[in-house]
Image (cartoon, rainbow, N blue to C red):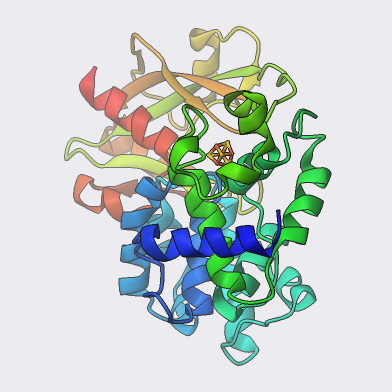
Length: 350
Ligand code: SF4
């Protein structure tokens, strides 16, 4: 690909660029805070899902300083449902670091990489989109476009280095931010995983995979190792007024700092719900419900059996530290991850 192809891509972008809530109008430089926030949200999450979260965050915390001043609990709660909660903790830590150093995101790669939660991709996206620096931001969409343009047959993840090297050589010296967004848009709307629309693609004449008739087969992927399944018993203890007992997870690790209903440890192997009742947060008349709540994390599948009980006043004094009651009307304010919302819904439905 040559500068001509970059020009074709930019010309296509000028006509077909997506309108996205975080995208600056044509010809305007994007706010680094907005770029950073949207890119963190978009990691592992679709544009459609991120839209509403992004709008809510920007409305509530319009500047990096405002986000830095927010209590972590509020940020986690606003993030609930987006998944990958380490991102939210890092988001908050990063906002604090930027606010403490004057409220400006650094422009250089090393300064950005030193901030919590910012990796090579996010640093490149911020540098390109917010500062118009010729940085190469290679997300999943761009990876696919490059693999096809050069007919790279090496399966992912081994192909990553070659893809990044090829992508970096294509970045034009001018309009690097628009170019980065054009590549993202091309991958999202034209060079799609299934049925790429090669006939309308601005890069059609240069594309090797199209010429070889293998576009849809690329990028190839090495087979993934099967995920293990962990199982546990979740305890939904409800007061007569409908309030549910929640506890806070440890600050670090999976779902760190989020709220949850208490549960037995999540382990691989068969679960004996009757034995797992020994892990109940309080003695009560626990009823084991039919059905399972299933959820998939990055490294494992989770199957939770749900036990439900109604709390009586005499037992409330025995609650463990770190647990608290949450009334139904306050539930949306709590940092409840999706899996726990599913558990509560299952207990309410059954
Ligand atoms: Fe993708 Fe087809 Fe364009 Fe090649 S020609 S970049 S395969 S849409």
